[in-house]
Length: 148
Image (cartoon, rainbow, N blue to C red):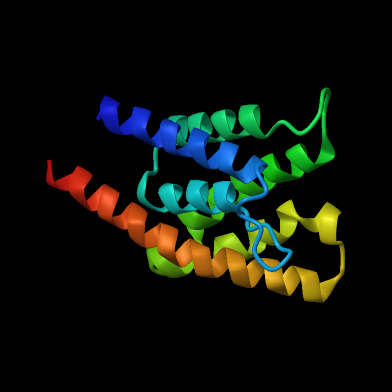
C-alpha cells in the first residue's frame, strides 16, 4: 500500500518534469499530461489525502514563476474540480474520466487559449487521445494492486 503510494508520487513527479520540457509538444500543442494522469488515478483511488498529495507534488514541480502564478491557480482549481467530477458524475469510471478531462483541460488552459476554439479543440483532442492510453495503463496498475 505504501509502496504503491510512493510509486504514484514518483510517477506524478516524473510526468511533471516531463511536462516542463518541450518533448510533449505535438503539432504545436502541449497536452496536459500531469492533469490527465491525476484525473485517471483519481478515477481509481478515492482517497483525498492521496489525491491532494499528487496535486501538491505536481504543483511544486510545475511552479512556473516566483510568487503566485494565475496559470498555476487555474491548474490547481481545474485539477480539484476534475477530481470532484470524476467522483460525482453518474456514468462509468471511464466516461466520467473523459468528461472531467475535457472540462478540466479547458479550465486549465482558459487563460492561455481564451475563446480560440480551434486551439481549444486541438488541445482537448490530444488530451483525450493520450488520456485514453494513460487511463488504460493506470487500469493495469490498479488491477494488479487489487489482486495483491
